[in-house]
Length: 57
Image 1 (cartoon, rainbow, N blue to C red):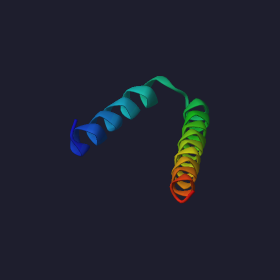
Image 2: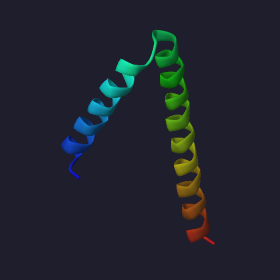
Image 3: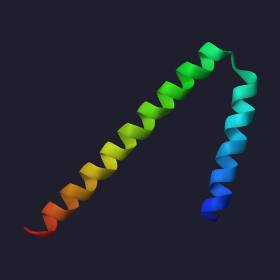
C-alpha cells in the first residue's frame, strides 16, 4: 500500500466512524487514539534506544 492509499484509507475510515458517533463519543475516541499513538511511539523509541545500546556492548 502506498502512503497515499494509506492516508486515503484512514480518512475514509474516520468519516465512516464519525458518522456513527455522537460528538462526545467522537471526542473520547479521538483522545483515546491519540494516547494509543503516543504510547506506541514511546514503545518504538524505547525499543530503538535499547537496540542501539545493545549494539555497543
